[in-house]
Length: 498
Ligand code: FHN
Picture 1 (cartoon, rainbow, N blue to C red):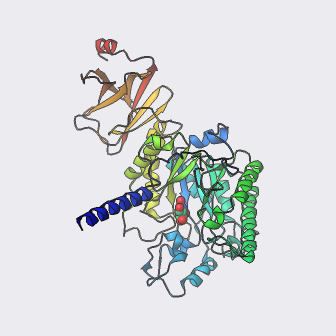
Picture 2: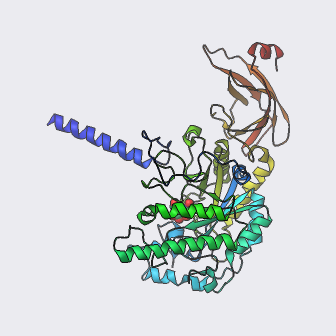
């Protein structure tokens, strides 16, 4: 009996560990497969792209995501009853709280879509003032509603009282502000009768899914040809078995899309290889130009990224990308939280993309307006540490995040030490030697001193930077450290009393 209890405990422990490992699969490093597989439908290019379009992507720093569609009319509730679905998924509401005949109600909402206050130029100006350098706009979410007058669908903005092409206005307005536009496109399409998530089995089902694939292809080419200024696609909803099994089709489609639009950027969510491996192929290689799995999460370690380009997409509420009328029922991230995530991302070589969910009239939520302003104010003062920077090869520190550009090292401080002494730790082998330190916000120079703390067998050297007692900041602030190329010569630095 004892043995059985022991066995049961071991089994339970193993199950829990496995479950945990599965649950964390997007939060840890990608496991490298042990064996190499010959692939016909692997990545279209190996290694990182070096062209100008991709270089520009790397330097964006901050992006804006916009989830806008007919779901904005509902705003996460109906007749005062709130859904537990993410607000943009509200059509899928079911169970006891769902309104009677809900799907039918939802499917007729487009007849009310008339966003009188929509002004793409206003949004673009706001995004620019916030510091966004690219925008990802939902052309079609899972409900299948097209924000452009697609000739392949009868469920588009053209059929609404508003009538006008929203995608065009977004592409033009944002491009005019110097913000690159990426088109979000969901492969899931609840409106198209040929759409299915499960693999088609019968001949009839196969023919129907083939029609769906052709429709998807047509819409993508339509988007590229209607809006040639777009820079890339941000694909979503590509986890269905039917799509996964269509790897030969999606491989060819990616080839054709890229050929038709040189420089086009497509992330790792678009397609999988012939073994069904998504994001990374069966050999652990990235599928697409950048890793697109960091949704509402951030890598804890730079090494997990394995040198790949990536972006993190983030909501302000815990979840829910479309408009939510009532923000009072949950925690909404503050500008402090979001700037922290922004600096976390750029310090690891990624872009941070903040989501906005405008309402059915074309207004951003009041909370979004406030955050956009606060983030913009902060970035205006600290942009040097945000844009065009790279990961600094230093041990992460508890004060905040390092970024680096040319001979400058930036430390964005979120946790100010109580003794006002910021201690920088560099490996003795570092080739960028600190020379001066200053506060980025006002240029005030800071005392920096080489410090031999005398730890036995230490492989690091330390520089102490003193923050003036009278420097008060409610916001995170940046210490700019200029460096020179060379070797760290501790004895010399000791003498120099820098
Ligand atoms: O299901 C969607 C969700 O509604 C939202 O669009 C996010 C944005 O990254 N993507 C999907 C979930 O991964």
